[in-house]
Amino acid sequence: MLCVTVDGMTTHGRKRTRATFPEVKVPEVRLPPLRPHDGAELEPEGDYDGLAFTDAGFAGQSGIGARFLDCGLYRCALDGTELVAARFTDCVLDGVRGVGTDLSKAGLRDVEILDARLGGAQLHGASLERVVVRGGKIDYLNLRGAALKDVTFEGVVLSEADFGGARLERVVFRDCALRRADFTGARMTDVDLRGVTQLDVARGIEHLSGAVISPSQLLDLAPAFAAQIGVRVEPAAG
Image (spheres, rainbow, N blue to C red):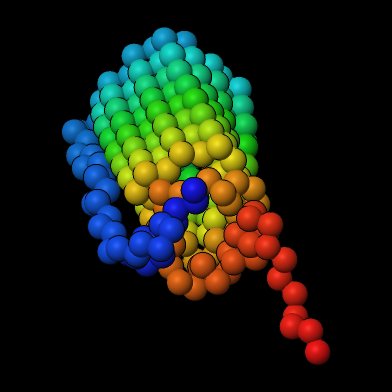
């Protein structure tokens, strides 16, 4: 049965109870003094510790399986960069940009992503824990089958994001635009959508169980909910 929380009140059958929403854990990234990267190309399985990558052009390079610890990536170009199964821990990605960045099966833990401009970023099968995505615009984000835990999206525009089959636990959206999102097969636990300024669900409306929405969002989504359960909405006769 679809059970959606509306502004803190849970409706399940005829029972209506006050719901409590757990606090989402946010990363506290405190980078040490960083050494400038020497400008070399990324290396598969490379180890990068305490480095600052500034205005670096990584387009088309491969860092498959690379490990980044206490690193800052500032205004880096990531067009077509292969970072499959890479690991980012206690890192800041500020102003990164690119099309087709491949982060599938990557692991991001205690990471801040700020003012990113990405298109077609691949994070399917990735693991995100204590991650903040703040500002910027990300188009066609692929999070199919990903695991998101304690993730905050704040002030970011997400256009046609694909959460198909993803697991979302303690995920909050604040001042975000979520356009044409796909939640097909998603599993949600304590997902807060109340701060979404534009909530447009293209597919998977039936998989919003475990999410909390506002009363105004419920009205916006009412036609989609009605269609999901086979209810026709028409003007009264006469």
